[in-house]
Structure formats: structure tokens, C-alpha cells
Image (cartoon, rainbow, N blue to C red):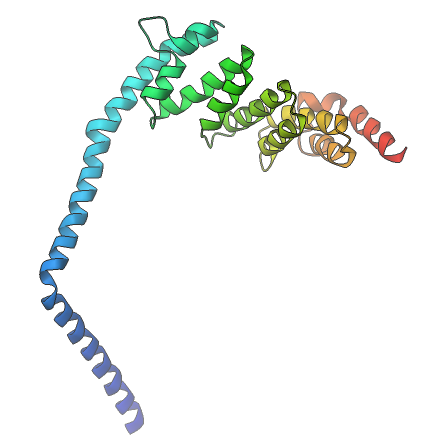
Length: 229
């Protein structure tokens, strides 16, 4: 019992000594600590002021500017969508002038798709590569479209790499099977029959209700026949 009491006293003594050391440190460094805390407050306050007074207005301006470009895009007027009409900015300028905003980021996507559809594949890759999104549709389409651009440039292996990135870990029923089928066909053409079968089989297994699944059995059968040959 005496031993236990001694241990408790030692713990209390250690804690008391630690507190004393902390108090001593605080007293000796009170001025510098005050400056540190004050500095952190200024940084945090400045950050929120930046968001409220600078970033939010820029976001709103960017949304207003991109609206007209999106309208031209929907009308298939891709040059006006890209370059603007003289009164409103196109996707290229929105992406450049409003970099760091959501609308500026989205402008990269639209510019990339516009360039892809006008045959400027290297520009398409550049803009789509700058686009960032966690959206399960936009992210897949952007990555898959980079694959399309590489394919048009005669670089099938790079195209297949991007198709693979587009579908890896994704489960959106609308766009994933579309790029899975593209990947399967391209892998078959490149002679990677095992990988091709994996892409086709995933459509059959995970996306039974997709449009691509309707005739996927014949693709699987064709690849299997080549493997066995």
C-alpha cells in the first residue's frame, strides 16, 4: 500500500514539474507566443477575407461569362464557344482569366471537348488534362476523351492507357461501359486479347442493363476464339 502511495505521489510530482516547466516556458516566451497566435489569426482572417471579397465575386463573374459560351457549345457553334463573340468570353479566355474558379475549371473541359470535335487533338489533350473533377460522369468523359484524342493522333497505346484510367474504379452506368467497349476493341486490335476479354467481360458482369451489353457476348466469343486459336 505504501508502494502504491509512493507511485501516486511520483506521478503527481512529475505532472506538477511538467506544468511548472510549461508555465515557465510560457512566461519566458510570452511575447513570441503572442506574436505567433496573432500571426495565425491574421492569416486565417486574411484567408476568409480573400474568399469573401475576391474569390466569390470572381466565381460569379466567371459563371456569367461561361454561360454564353455554353450556349454556343450547345448550338454546335464551337468556334464562338472557344473564342467568344466579341462581347462575351469564350472557353479559352474564361479558363485563362478565371483560373482557380469552378467555372474556369469547367471551361477547360468544354474547351477540350470543343477542340476534340474540331480536330485539334493536341489542344484537346492540353485543356482536358487541366480539367479536374470528382464528378463520376465528367471525370470519366474527360479522361476517355483524352484517349480519343491520342487515338486520332495515331497513338493507340496512349489512348488505351487513358481509356483504362477512365474506367478504373468507376461504376457509372451511363459512361463507363461506353469506354470499356472502346478499350476492349482497341486492346483486341493491339493484340492484348486477355485484357480485351477483361474489358468486355466487365460490361457483361457489371453493366448488364447498359446499351453496350446488348451484343457484348459476340465480342467476348470473338476474343475467346482468337485466344484459343
